[in-house]
Every structure is written in structure tokens, then in C-alpha cells.
Figure (tube, rainbow, N blue to C red):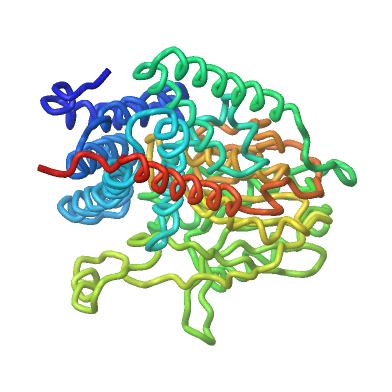
Length: 506
């Protein structure tokens, strides 16, 4: 079964629509079957396509996915960042084009080097190539791992593979399922049977793995409280609103003094840490008297180096410790632009000062008798970033400022990624956000407690410290990546031996 006429006449539009529909597989839509069906549609359009045509189809799919899935970049840059409309559109479309190029590269490589249609192509080469493509776009040029296919499976049986091999193994299982769907449509009886057996084995294994616990509880439960101030981003830094913000965070914190651990979101206060010194000192004293430890998201200026940091301050037992964000957001926290552009940004009253990244080897913070692995903002999109601290950390904390995104899909997508970080590590994750979605995530990736979005709220709950390492925590991404590379290399080799190079471009 070939689709040459369909792919030629309407292929680009079908690919674009499939990419857009695929965005609904992720939260808040959470229609995870679309993460199988939509890539399968693209794979069908790639059948028989020459390399340049396959690249164009891949680009259309990627453009549809990111136009629909990351439209909120415009909201962050223009509505709350106050950048001109043309600049916000330029940055949004620029990111979409860059991301779509990875899917174009995958299509070109598949058509140029990998096998002709058959089980080897659909069940091996395509899934392995897709994993390598998503891994590449997740780290190259600082990376953007948003909307990786595996994330759509936070509530499907395939999530059971996360502690075994991380998000890329979940993606691999999803794409093998997509390839099996293509093989069952295009192949004969033998191919259909093979596809059914492979999919049944994958999904039943996923169900069994979801019941498996890889880490062990240690010690007693601790009480935690998340302070979600829900200050609108456009009011937060207004001088007239500053006193109200300080009063709100103090009063909400005082409500739960006596809780073992109290967590504020990223950059909770509209001031630098040293400017709020007396305020923080008074709050710390109250917390110590009531037996509470604090973890506070604050911006810090280092007078010795003249650098600014996005940090999390832990106040525990008379000791203070800092974690500084390592993964900074391009055009949000640092600006890779020439000097003349910075002068223009200054004249336009736009932010133009760069944050500095923290060191790569920062140890866990100590609070509430625990060693806590910390991430700030979209650092929780990088699974391998937290691996180094898991030998010691018994609890995870992520703080973020979601006020930049308004009522968009971004906070839901980020919560979905955070769920995988807890699942990969086999630990509780306490997630404090400025206006939602704050929550407590269990070691199995389920949301145990969840705050109401856009509402000032103190979310209370209990968490259990966990120790031990999941298989993914021991090995990281390398087993899946090496396996995928070897599969692609062998598929290309055996495909060429069988005379498999695709139809060249006309």
C-alpha cells in the first residue's frame, strides 16, 4: 500500500495538521494515543518520498507541533515581557523553524540512508532515528526538550519505562508502537502478526513496570507547605505593589509555621536578596522558633563579582545555603545579542542584563533533615541534569515562575515533565510555582496534592524521603542513545546491502 498521490497533493498539509494534532497528546489535552497516531501518519507520508520531499514533510509536521504546542512564547515575550509584537512573533517563529528543522533532518536521513518499507524500517530504524533526533534537539545550542514524544505518556502504561531508561526509552516505546501501526497497515500477514506481538509485549511490560518500585523509603514522613502567592506578573515589579507582595508572602508563611519545610516559588519577591535582608532575617527567626526550615526562590546580586543569579535559598538550623540555576532561558535570562541590540533594548526599557549560570557540580541543599535535589524553572525539562545529586538526595524540589505564561498550556506541559523527573528518580518532588500549578508529586509520577491555579494558596502535605537508585539514575541516557545509534547504523548498512537507498530527488 503506497500513498504517492496523497503525499504529493496534500502531504504537506496533512503533515502540518498531524503535527498540530500531536500537541493535543500533551497536557492539558493528555490524549496520549495521538502521540502514536500522529507520528504514524507522518511515517506513512514518508513512505516512498525522496529525501527532499521527506525533509519538507518532516518540517511541516514539526512546524504544526510547535506552533500549536508553544504558542505561549508569544504571551511570555510580548504580553508579560513587553517586547514589541514584531519581536515576539520573530522569536516564536524562529524557535518553531529551528525545532521543525530537526524533524526535516529525520525525514531526510530516513529517506536517504535507512531501509525501504518493511519491519526493519518501521519497528527499528524509524523509532531509533526519532529518539536520536529528539535527544539532539534537547541539548544542541542549549537545547529545548519541550514536547518530546514520551512526555505524552505520563498517564499511559509506557510511563513504566521511565525509571528503567528515562524519557527517551518511553519515546522509543511510543515510536515502536507507531511503527507497528504503520507496519500493520502496509505489510502482509506476517508483518501484522509481528507488529501485534511487539506492541502487546511493550504495553504489558509497561503495565508490569508501573507496579515496580525501584527505591526504598527511609526515615519518617515530613510535613511540607508550598506558598503560591499568585501575584500577576504585570504587577509583581510595580513599586506600588511591592509592599503588598512582601506582606502576602509573610502572612501566608506565618500561617504554616511549624511545618517541617516551607517552599516559596522562583523569584518570589520583587527585590534582590540583599535588598530584602531585614525582611528575610525576621522571617527566618520566626521560622526557627517554630521549628520550620525555609526554601525561598530569590534573585541575588553578588557585589564581589557584579553578577546576578536566579537562586534558591535554604535556611535551616542556623545555616544558609544557595543553589543557583544552571540552565538559563535564552532571551529571558540571558540575551545572545550584539552590543547595539542591547543599547536598543535599554532605550526601549526592555530587560537587557544577563543572569549568570550556577556551577554544574552544586551539591544538594540541606533542609528539614534531608538532602534535597533542586531545580529552578524549566531545568526540570532535563532529566539527566538531576542525576548527579541522586546518590545523596532523598527529596526533590522544583521552583518556577509560571506567571509569564498566563492561562496557557505551558504550566500544564511543565507539570507533566516534572512528573517524569519524580518517576525517573523514584522520589517525591515538591513543586512550588508562582501562580500554578503547584503540587506534590509521588515517586510513581502521580500528583498527590495540587493547588488551584491563579489563586493565592498554601498547599500542605506530607512526603516520605526515599533512597536508592533507579536503573536510569545509575546509567542516564546513554544505554538508550547507544542502542538507537547502533540500530540506525546497522539498519543503514543492511539496507544498503539490499539495495535500499531511497529514490533520489528528482
